[in-house]
Length: 440
Ligand SMILES: [Zn+2]
Figure 1 (cartoon, protein in one colour):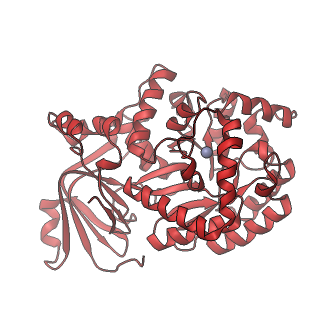
Figure 2 (figure 1 turned 120 degrees about the horizontal axis):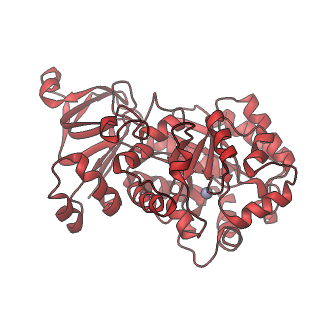
């Protein structure tokens, strides 16, 4: 979708962040404009603030979309998800490694077909937008055409997406394996074709240490050296059987994270899915490297993987960047609201501290943007930011409506929204200042 140059505006209650709610008192980090106006032009926010102060500046000809009784937020950011796994969501009865073999590899094998890949990518992106998610870090399959299909569909919608071809040269079926050399050649061409093309961003994507030879991991590290602004995403310390397999495949590594570090894959633009079974030395390593852990609570519960220690990861003396991920097909929803709700429950199971609603919204917006080094572009509502927004309905269902009816402020509504909310709570989603989804 071409970015419209027309000036538009949106009126309603909006929330955004001025600080990190894990570092300061959460209520001091959040900024709420009860009757706000956000003015947008050429895909960006040009001005925002109280309606009463800004309305007079606005030319009468400018279209103002009015959303009373709603909460407007920056679009959600999903830091870990697999678009080709959407057809295999909700597959019964296995933990990670047999689940991959029984359900995921056969599903991903279909993506050698470009037309099929394009159809799934299109449906997946529409689902993200229906859930208010405007940016995601996405795994494609081992097939280069699955990446082309995804970026083509993202470009069509104008969305800012991070994605990459899965690298997998061992411990996978023949039809899903590349080689260190073919992977290198494919990635060189894909980075050239897609990285920084409009809003598209490339991520070097080895699936995980089990399915890549040391040669392939080194090749991935070499590509990152050649293209330092490209992202890297992979899985880390998700499941106990996976941990055992990695330590037997890489007996000389000090830890699972160290396998990636030795190949040059641990940097500021690295996103590690899960990180459930990390030691203190790993957290320190992550902190110094500036990398991100993608916490995927619905997936960790669905596959019985374990409980992520969020407050351990984010500890204020050596904070590690954390984002939230839906991790579909192991995850059970593309809704970031639902994912925040499950993150709250996991925080209760995993330790003494409880995730607060403001902290959860930060993880899904400004915190994720900061983790991904995209905080000058997305994640907040402020002049100069890209105009990706979602409009939330705190009365979307009868239960939500009766629960939020007693709330005094928008801030009070955030917790019920993340516990009871889902795709039905998203009234509209804007990308580049234009509505790309409106609830019927
Ligand atoms: Zn995953």
